[in-house]
Image (cartoon, rainbow, N blue to C red; front, side, top):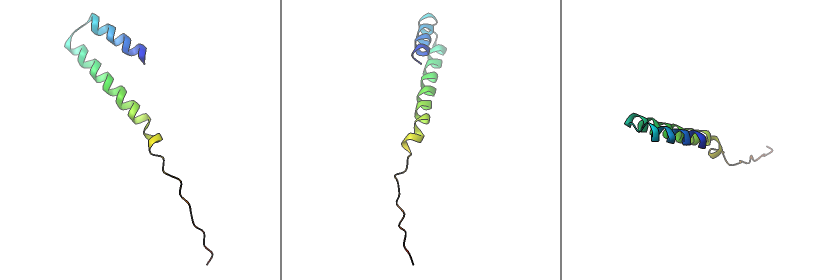
Length: 56
């Protein structure tokens, strides 16, 4: 990932166009959303529940 950001930074330095900056912002947004999405199952773990068994 760091290499991709570094390569993108190099492209921005060489091609300092506005559209390239928009692509950079969009790419960073997509990466941030992916990281948030990929960690979502880890955050949503339910606490363990206990079941009471009664004889009737």
